[in-house]
Length: 244
Image (cartoon, rainbow, N blue to C red; front, side, top):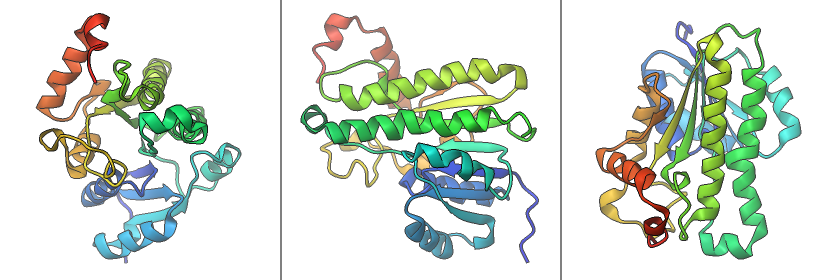
C-alpha cells in the first residue's frame, strides 16, 4: 500500500506535455502530486499507464479561466502544497489573435488572469506553513515585444512581472518563486507552428528545469536560449523592431 512520505506538489495545467514530464520527475523523487486540469480523463489515463505507483498522483478538475471556482478548488485539496507549478497554456498565432478577440482573451485569461486568481489564493493562505516554492512556466516571448508574437508575448510578460512582484511579497516567508522563461518547446501547443528544429526543446528538458530549479528567479533552460535571452534584453529598440 502506498504511503506518502514526500512533499505535496500541486501542478496546475497538468495535462500539458511539460507538466506530464514534471509529474514523472516529482513522483520519482517520492513526492505526492495533485495533478489539476480540465482534461481529467486524459490525465487519468496518463497516470494509470505512465506512473509506476498511480496512488502517488491525485487527479483533480481545475479550470484556469473559471475564476469563481478557484477558492473552492483550493479549499477541497486533499493536502496543502509544499510546491506549486503553474503550467497552464493556450496559444493562437499572432495573425489570428489580431482578428480573433476570443483567442486573444483566452490567452490573457489562461496565462495571466487565471494564474493571478489561483496563485493569490495559494499565496494568501498563511495557515499553510508548508508552502516553500511557486514555479510559473513563462516564455521568452515575453522578454521584448516583437511583431511576430507580441499578443501572446504580452500575456507571458504580464505573468512574469506578476511572479517578480509575488517573489518580493513572499520573501519574508522565505518562499521561493521561479519563472521558467522558456524558448520553443516541442509540444502539442506548438505543433501547428513553423519553428526552427535546432531551437526546439523537449518537454522533459523543461520539466527538469522546473523540478531542479534553484532559488534564483529567472531560469532560462538551454544554453542557446540563454544567449538569445541576454541578447533580447540588451538590444536597442531600433534593432528589436527589425526582428521577425
